[in-house]
Every structure is written in structure tokens, then in C-alpha cells.
Image (cartoon, rainbow, N blue to C red; front, side, top):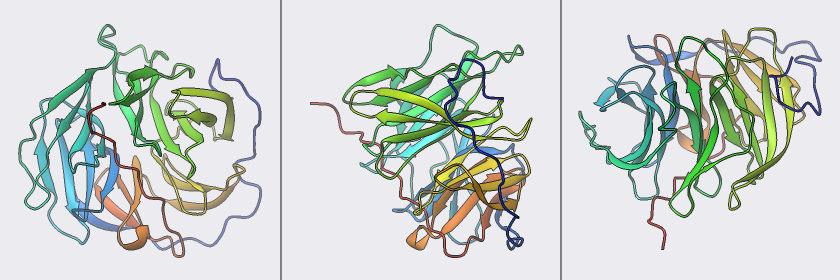
Length: 304
């Protein structure tokens, strides 16, 4: 069933053909003892993977090849991160967005945050959740309900130096997740991690507008969508409990990999490496013949 209040236009089967042969198992790049991470991102300049430690006041970095991960402490828990055109990093903490300057050579042990904007300051039950940059270099993100009631009170936003913080006209969620964009930037994918559907809509970055919300893929009961990423073929990869699923552009499942993770991203040479972060550490997931789409860095130049 689609989340309450979301208009259903199209529902597709989760699996319409026999599954392909099992893929090789993931390989561990870094072992970690903290909670599963969020917002895994590839830093092409520093050749590192970066991610936010879920429910921890830190972000982490790991070199492209196996090595000891770096830990950079923050004043608050981070829900998301994005790399900027200037080389800085945009961070989404619980109730605010800010800029930081990581040391890509040694790894800063303490990141100082330059505040940008408060998020949902009047609502103490929400915190910044999943997010990524759109193809214009604007940040699109959502919030989650951190209170015990778990009600759908989270929203979706767009932030840019040109337009400031704008709320997107999307239905409320309990926990915003799985945000990503098509190669042309005109189609946005998103989900409520506590529901059982991946949604899609038409997206206009400059206007901060969305329309034609529809169900992209109906999930199995209880299988909420976590992190997501699009590959160069336009297929959507979705991290779900116990598995990674690859969806074709029509919403049909074309590949399934047994692996439990919370966030995924493409990186490495030619963006041909799929990485996943979850309980236990950072892993690479073999996906022969598949490459990802490059992230658009956040445009952090001040508006004229």
C-alpha cells in the first residue's frame, strides 16, 4: 500500500521474471563499530568515501583502497553530507545546514561548521534526514520524526545560495529517504523509510517545484527504502533491509543482491565501484559492467 496521502498513478510488480544468478559477495573496506551510516558520498578530488555516522556526532572517511577510516567530530549528529564546488563540505546536522572544510590529506579530527540556515526550528520532533544535490547543484533533503510517536511530520526541502530554503510540495513522511535524480535532473525519486514504496515526481530545480507524484515501485510489506543511487543506465539502486535491489526505469526489479546496508554510492575509477555502508563497516559490492552517475557538487558560491 502506498503511504497515506500520496496519489497513486502507477504500481508495478516487484519482480516479474526469475532472479539472475547470485552476485559475488561484498568485500569489506573498513570495519566500524558505530551505528549504520547515512549519506555515503564519493569524493573524486580526495579519492575517499565519506559518510555521516548515524546517531553519532561525526563524519567518517575512508581511502579508495582499504585503510584505516578517519573520524571527524561534529557539534551535533549529521544526517547528510555533500561535496561543494569550492572543495568544502555541506553538512546537514539535526536542525541546521552548514559548511565545513575537511582536510582531504590527513583528515581533520574536529570540523568547524559555518552555519547556513536553520531547518524546521519550530518543530522539536524533527531532524535532518536523507538528502543529495540535484543536477543544478542545489541540495534537496528531507526530515524525519525523532519522537516516539513516529508520526509522519517530516518534510522535503530544497536549499541553494540563490534561493535559500524552500519547502517542496510533497506529502509529509515519517523519515525522508532514497532521494536521487535522473541524469537530466527532471525526475526526482524519494521515499518514506518507514513505508513500503519508492515514489517519483517531476522536478523543476529553478522553480523549486514538483508535480505528478506517483508510485515508482511498490515494496514488500515492511521493506522500507533506505539509501538510493542511479547508475549510468538510468537504473535505480535501492538499499532495503537485507538486500540491494536494482530497478529498471519502468520500476521492474532486474537485479537483487543479498546485503544489509543503509546507504550506497558509486565511486572509484570511472564510477565503476558500488560501495555500501551499514552495520559493521564500509563495503564494496561487485556489479560488473555497471557504472554510476557523478554527483553534482553543491554550488556554495554566494548569490549575487
